[in-house]
Image 1 (spheres, rainbow, N blue to C red):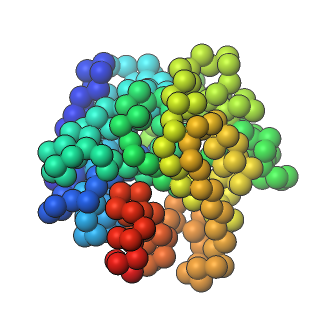
Image 2: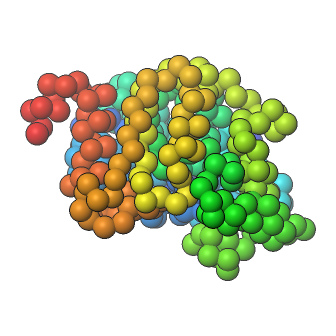
Length: 297
């Protein structure tokens, strides 16, 4: 694992980790969930590198190792896709060119918001395929009762109130995340969740053409015990990737017999031989074809 630094179009410096391997079959960029530090994905990154896919992780501006130069309250949640993910894709693409000998086999694994904001990144067209893990369009009213009352309280009260006149949102103190967030990101997230179209709401004025134009394969993995990404919200997000070739898998935790998956569990090592292997097989199919997957198995 090696530390890497790269710059966004607006001059911010982001910190990432690179998991190299010899003669890589492809390059995988992991885009984190909201409030999740990139170190959370280190075991998965090592797994990919051990199986022939060099991997890149990174922290969005104002989180983890990626410090923000300026006023944290100015950071917008859309910046994470439009600027940060865009720069990370460019960096991963350059590593693919350097180490693969070609840049064809570049893939994304987007966890939660990492899949939500992909269409905001102009460089998304450089990807060959993407895997979404627990990615959804989390409008609060689409949760079943009484869970939606809690989600409504979070997006309608907690997020705007505790981010008001602050630079950072105290996500750790309220148990929302293991690290605090830029206050502007928290405010935006609350606004998005109060709109039935989430970030796609017309009133937000975001550049959405990339969602319609992304015509690559997407494997969406969601889980029946995930209280943060119910299937209705997962399906709602995927509908905005109009041109993509989508495989939408809704997985029962009982089918694996390894306990809870929830919103974060996919990246835990206990799923190495099941969910991790599923993602690896899918990547191999996208980059090497069916015959290579059969040989490996």
